[in-house]
Amino acid sequence: MEYDSGNYEAATERAKELFGYDELRAEQRRRRESGDRVQLGLGISTFTEMCGLAPSRVLGSLNYGAGGWEHASVRMLPTGKVEVITGSSAHGQGHETAWSQIVADPAGRPLRRRHGPAR
Image 1 (cartoon, helix red, strand yellow):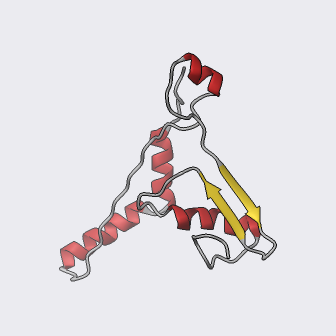
Image 2 (cartoon, rainbow, N blue to C red; image 1 turned 45 degrees about the vertical axis):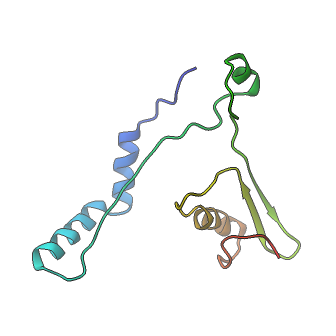
């Protein structure tokens, strides 16, 4: 099986452009040099995670013991709320907020309640 051959360096450079990394570094430098009591810390992290590896028959032929699919569903409830269910599990990355933001705009819904069961 071949792994994705994406151009990760170019994607990272583009992401840095979009969030103004160079400008943030200049602001960070300015604060440090001026002795500003409020400092600016920057952190960037990228990772590649295996998911959706292959159809079940391929995984079975490889004696692969874990699942190979990721799942998500989005439903508009009769109350007007939007319910998002994903197969990902959050470990402090802000999944609840991210999924809510991704779904709210196209669904034309305000971003009010970010997570938890529908009521």
